[in-house]
Image (cartoon, rainbow, N blue to C red; front, side, top):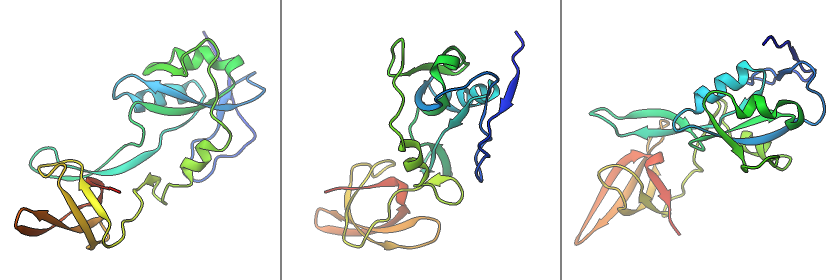
Length: 191
């Protein structure tokens, strides 16, 4: 089956894929949430773009604690999900049956598009390198370690120690206080 593709008139912004849609797709282009198969967000994105759809897969940077060496890795902000811009009347089957795609949310005969401005609001959180990072912590914020050997230990944020996202946290153990340095993605603010 041969399909002709054409570019829409809206030029791509910096760092954005050009908006390419199947020829003849006209009408209301809307953003939809697409659920990918487990750990296949990039695969779904690739095949949707290959079919001419515009996609958006936001990423965040986290500290990896796997193996003997840790490091920063990019992970999808919403694991298992991405956004796709299309006209459902013309392209629903293209999207629904793309490799790596599990379903379009909400799962129904006619999926409901996202409200206007949702994707733009998420994009506004990106930094220059296209990565969304957690909001900065302030001194004396109560934090909890979310991953690693000290998971679920509570502490108090002291200060940022480097430009690479390292922070110093004061941990309270029984009759002992310790200060540790770790990557900010290993922490979450608690009320």
